Amino acid sequence: MTELARRIEALLFLSPDPLPLVVLCDLAEEPPGPVQRALAELAERHGPEGGLEVAEVAGGFALRTRGDVAEVVDRLRERPPEDRITPAGLETLAVVAYLEPISRPQISRLRGVAADSTVTSLVERGLLEEAGRLPEGGAMRYRTTRLFQERFNLRGSRDLPPLERFELSGPEADRVRRQLVDAGHLAVDADDDGG
Amino acid sequence: MTPGGGGMLPPDPMAAPDALQQPMELDLFEGPFDLLLTLVLREEVDLLELPLVEVVTGALGERARERWDTETAGELIVLLAAMAELKARRLVGEPVDEEPDPDALEARERLAARLVAYAPFQRAAGWLADRGRDSAGPRYRRVPVEGAAPPPVPREAPERLREAIRPLMTAPPAPSLSHLTSRRVSLPEALGRLQGALARARSVSFDALTGGAGRLEEAITLMAALELARRGEVTLAQAEPFGDIAIVGRRR
Image (tube, rainbow over all chains, first blue to last red; front, side, top):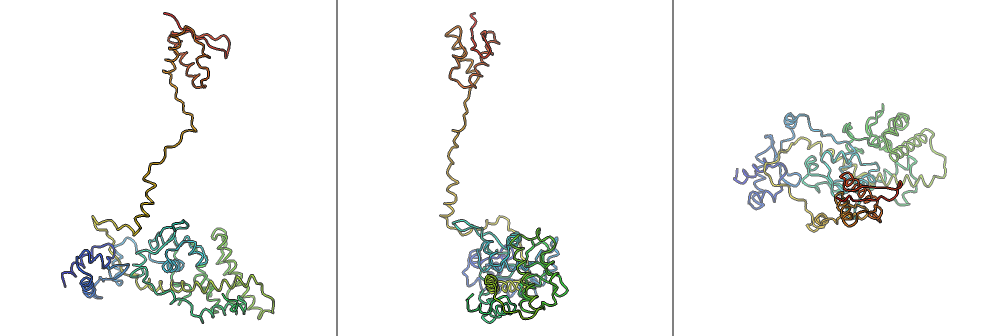
């Protein structure tokens, strides 16, 4: 194990937050190349046979416990972490993650239901945070947090599949419309009206 | 892909009620309300077998007024009405050819547009649900390092910070007291004034002394006169009630 890898391992062990590469370079006083090689060395050292792993998450590198030992490490806690997120919460997180910063009224308009209580509970759980208002005022806007990135194992706030990937394909959208037509919910010629 | 996002997750009892996500428990179906709607639209749930009364009771509940705000309740009622209409059509068979209501058509067109526009976020929520399940295990050290540098200040233009703090740095203007009449009168001053007047003349008229002064000055002057009378320095004489008072100094 190289001297640099030893140092980096110690830094990752003590740091309460994931450490970005630039910070690691700064602390270790080494250029990015060797630091990245040291990180790779560490990742190899903390393989699946160990209880820890090196992860690139939430804008930095972290030394964290492996998922399969969650049950035993959670015994250190007084009660297991409240980890469940409601479907409404997940949809709200998805909306904010792709459109941040975004205000509650905007979320509500998009989702078609009031999002206030869902946003409040996500803020309380640290998955969303306030992101300021527009200079001209208006509603508070929200963004996802580093905790959100850690919880969903994202490398950063942009580490999401492109939204286009989730868009309904032409045939799928047509199928939704056709079903609405078949159900008597849409005029047959509605397609020609554009929509 | 589950249309309702992570529709398989159990509802969180702590979460506030969300009309479209509320759990439905029917013989035929258990899950969030909007998933039921989607399944009905996809014809994966047979509407003819769906007991509408139970759906309505489940969605609106007996205490709908307390549970939902007007807008949400309205939306639920529209959706339930659409389901009822849909079921009626199925039961009756092909509808007779009639002129559709253009308003209803427009509303339905909007509904379709919204479903299509929102679908990516529902699918993204499904992706998040899968991702969240896969990465639920790892735990992080959360212990802050003693003596650690404070977290970096969020990147914000210094000019904006300066603009924001500038109003706090200037002393506010002194509040105007012009609307308050705070006239200070003191008994020793009134005593001095009265004694001065008595030094120049043996008898002083109370009215002359207080002519043009306010009620407060009159009261204080009267107190001063009474004080001098108590000390035996003057005698007071009033010819008639509310009349002038003659303050006569005693020559020693």
